[in-house]
Length: 125
Image (cartoon, rainbow, N blue to C red; front, side):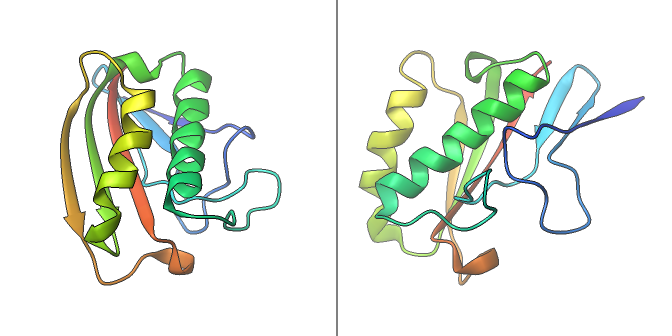
């Protein structure tokens, strides 16, 4: 059984996918790029501002599903420039200060709307 998760506290999907899906005791979040939930536009600013927006969007989706950042077990970060790795790490650490989830970070050629990063997560329901 699966349940689609939708909240207006995070950006709407920009394609034919759900913000998140609950299945088998887990919540699978679609990748989030740094979109302002109220405008649907990319936030302005450096990679630190963009990483914070992405993680705030993830937090909002998780909370709407009755979960939290503390229940995240796996993240995948996609970066268009690996030189942003350190700055993203500093922001990421603020959101996952204790017992951080397992993680992969991957360099990619491009992301939707020319975003600099995208993060997807899996959390316990």
